Image: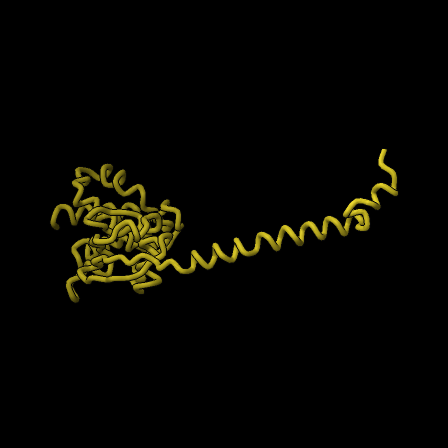
Length: 200
């Protein structure tokens, strides 16, 4: 067994346990600081990637963080707020846009992956004061209540029509099942899509 005299002869013999632990933590922290600061500085030097996208017929060149979704690009960078942020998890469909003619939930779609793409949002549907036929059908069929989901419903409805999923009301319901209407206007939404698909 080691005596107190032998302990006092060791380099750390003059330190209490508490002092030793405190000193060790301070030395370890000091060693780690330059690495952390260096990593942050290096990361800060990297320029965000530039992307070029055509939105509603207008070309935009914008630097975006690699984590930026198309939804956030539209709303926060380009101030196109017609596309709504609902669940932000791809479950409600409120953020649906057309990406190269295909409907996507923009909250889960990274902007940096689609440089060169063409995006159509609800703002790009009308021709001046003339509404898109599906927009007009939503009005005529009273297919909305609070209106929060409406832009996503319309964009998804256009995709549904283009994809040819309008053979029956049940087929429309199935094709539109990714879009939630919390007000419950589903019957009229289906009627609006059915009417537009038939050219009425």
